[in-house]
Image (cartoon, rainbow, N blue to C red; front, side, top):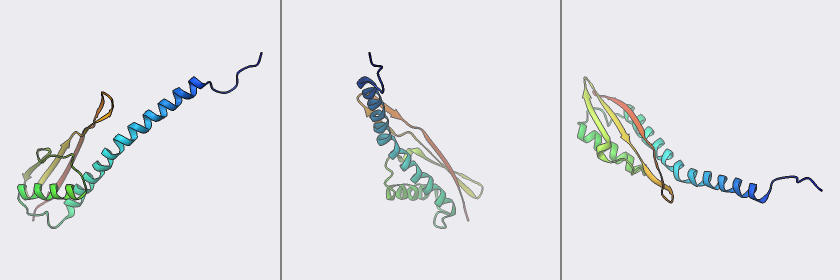
Length: 121
């Protein structure tokens, strides 16, 4: 009798299914994190932007929404952006939870939280 060498067909199928599941997850979730990187960059640029200084809360929120749309970020609703005014500064908080379908009845929810401060003139 010969000893079996290598993997069986069932082992290959199990590994292939596992790899395909990982690829599907990456294809669905990586774009969410790429959009979140755009949110971070919008907020970082806002802290040094001269146009953002001295704006009212409403105008600042509109500016943020416009810049997010330019960067193709559509997961954030206006109510996800909160702006509070302090002494000589405006504190911006963005909390949002993108949701999506992985496959079948398997969904994902990812929670993001970002903060930035814009110093007024």
